[in-house]
Image (cartoon, rainbow, N blue to C red):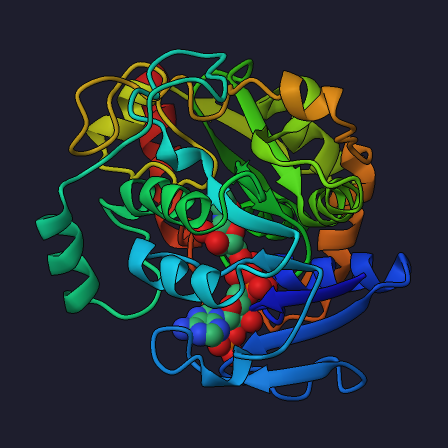
Length: 345
Ligand SMILES: NC(=O)c1ccc[n+]([C@@H]2O[C@H](COP(=O)([O-])OP(=O)(O)OC[C@H]3O[C@@H](n4cnc5c(N)ncnc54)[C@H](OP(=O)(O)O)[C@@H]3O)[C@@H](O)[C@H]2O)c1
C-alpha cells in the first residue's frame, strides 16, 4: 500500500514508519522538517498542516495515519484534501472521555465536547499541541471532524500512556533512569494501584495490521492484557536493570500534603483518593480503561521486560544533563523521604 503519515519523525511516528516498511509498504511523510536527518530513504513532503496544504493536493495514497492532529479545524482541512484514500487512522487519546472516575471505560462512553466559539478561541490563541485543559476536548472533536470528512473510512485510536524509546513525556523514562541510579527511591501511593501503558512499537505494528485489514471504528489502545500494578512495573524495572534500589512507598495523603504534582512531578501517579487539580473526582479510570475491543481485533503486547529493556538502552544514549519533561528532583526526593521517615517514628 502507499501510506502517507502526517508527522512520523518524533516518537510514535518513527515506529509507524518502521512497522509499515517492515510490512513492505511505500511510505511518504508530511511534516515541517524539525528532524530533517531522519529516514533519508523515505520521501518527505515539507509543510505546516496549520497552513498551506497545497503540496498534498493531487497526490494519491491508499491510507493515511494522522499522528499530529490537535485541532478539529486542522484535521478537517487535511482529511478533506485526502478524502480519496480508503483508510484514515487518527491518533487520538484516552483523554477524550468525559468521566474518568470509573475503571473499565469502553469506547461507548461519553466524550468531552465544547462549543464552536470556544474551539475557535483556543485554536486562534495557540500553536502546536495543547496538553492542557482542553487537549481531550479537542481530540474528541478532531475524531468527529475526521469522520465527517470521510465517513466510514476512519480508524480512531484512543491511546493511553505511550511508552518506548524517544518518549518525550519522560514518564516511564523517569522511573527507568531513577531506578538505574540505585539507592532509596520514593514510590507513590498504593503499591497495588493499577497502571496501564502502551508500547509505541506494539501499537504501531497493530495499527498497520488494522489498516491492511481495512478495519475502521474506535478503539482504546492500552496495555497490558492483565492488571499491571505500579509495584510490578517498578519491580520489573529493578530486575531488568539489576538494580539494588529500595522502593519506599509513601501515602497519597503525604504526597498531596507536600504539594507533589501528580503525573508531572511524580510520573505515572494519578491519585486514587484525590481528584486531579481542577477536577471534581479522582481519575480512577484513566489508567484502568477497557482494552477488550482492541485485543479482540488483534492488539498484542510484548513483555514488560522487553519494553523496559528498549527504553533503558535508549536512556543510555541520553545525557544526564538533558532537560526532562517530568520527574522529581533528587534533592526534593531525599527531603521527602526524610520527612516521611520522621512521620513514621
Ligand atoms: N505521548 C503519549 O503518551 C500519548 C498518549 C495518547 C495519545 N497520544 C497522541 O499520540 C500522538 C503522538 O504522536 P508523536 O508525537 O509520537 O508522533 P510523531 O509522528 O512521531 O511526531 C509528531 C510529528 O508531527 C509533525 N508535526 C507536528 N506539528 C506539525 C504541523 N503543524 N505540520 C506538519 N507536521 C507537524 C512533527 O514533525 P515537525 O515538527 O517536523 O513538523 C512530527 O513528525 C499525538 O497525536 C498525541 O496526541 C500521545
